[in-house]
Image (cartoon, rainbow, N blue to C red; front, side, top):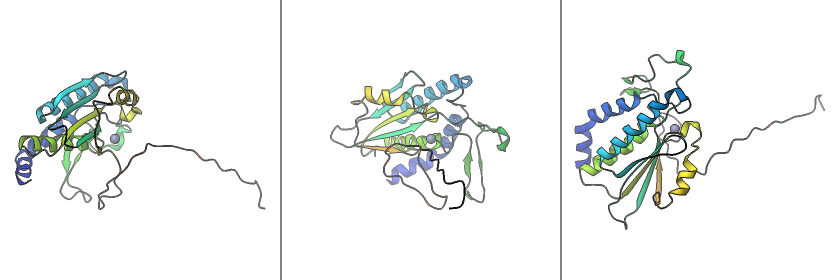
Length: 217
Ligand SMILES: [Zn+2]
């Protein structure tokens, strides 16, 4: 463990620099004008997986934006963790609410973040989170401390309803087989309260309209 932590400390600045480069890519899936940026982001994510030590890295085409896959299988008898994340981001408008350009990341100390936090579109949803997993994986790969098999599935359509994901999952059940799924694209209740979501069963949205009598009964 100490060796892994040393590796992270020694490489911390490079980790941050690399994340900044990823955050500069305007991978806005909802706006077709940014198509090239989304595709470029997929390629960059694949490079990061390869550099981190993943095997069989693929930019898998779908009807929409590609899904980036990579894996490290140490031993078939070990458990397998599947990491899910997304490299697309929400559109940044309304632009006037940004104090600095959304795709020019910077670190700033604020009352909420006295140690400093990274500000950019996608920094907290979801590039920062999946990059953390990729870099944790890298640290364990480089120090020979990875304790289990790992698979990554990083999509580019989460912000537009993950249209291609279901078909991809159905077509690749063998490839995606795992014992547990690790997702850091969920909730945080407050900055003082770290939050772990232990189960996801999909979302359902309902609109409830209630009508009552039009006079006092
Ligand atoms: Zn997200």
